[in-house]
View 1 (cartoon, rainbow, N blue to C red):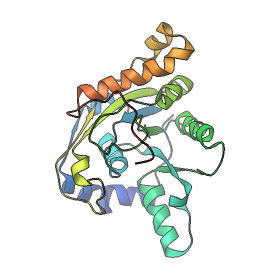
View 2 (spheres, one colour):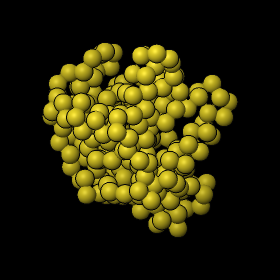
View 3 (cartoon, helix red, strand yellow):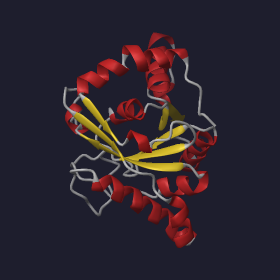
View 4 (spheres, helix red, strand yellow):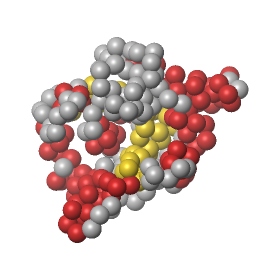
Amino acid sequence: MTGPATTAAEKVLRNVLVGPPLRAYVRMTVEGLEHVPRTGPVIIASNHLSFVDSMLIPLAARRKVGFLGKAEYVEGTGVKGWGKRLWFGEFAGMIPVDREDPRAAARSLELAEEHLAGGGAFGIYPEGTRSRDGMLHKGRTGVGRLADASGATVVPCTLIGTDKVQPVGARGLRPHRVTVRFSPPVDVAALQQQHVKTRLYRAITDEVMAAVAQRSPQPVSAEYADRAAG
């Protein structure tokens, strides 16, 4: 499994029009790239500080990475609709989810599993929303569920400095140095042997967040992030 095919539009955006200028603008340093498989299903689980995170992770990982997002981001007609689909769909790799669907949560997991089953790379933010207070918050167990269900490699990712590129409330981007650190994959198989299902998802999630925290300067919070504020 090699993952979803890369379109011509995405290649131009990622390799010419957006990727190189964005990488230079934020002065991005990547560490631990050897931990990201070049092919096959992989979950990249990261802290979340800024909207720009979902654009920088694929550039750092050198893979097409899918992220869940609101369906309205890729809807619309005319030039505006085309632009939204090009930006969010082709460049950002967004997988649309209808938030009005009462099955949205379950459908999100299904879409992520389908993406991984095709050999794709999938990005997830266990905190559930961007941190608005600078703290690294407790992870929600969706990443654990997805890891157990998909069998994909799980690579923790630590982002540093993206909150300075796009501070809370800011509309545009600001030049600032960014570091992307990939950690060794979580040993999901070992955790599956150690824990019953009712505790497994939390164990995987905690392992991911511990790896993120180990390489992050963020203070750690034992509380969940407030998604209503995000």
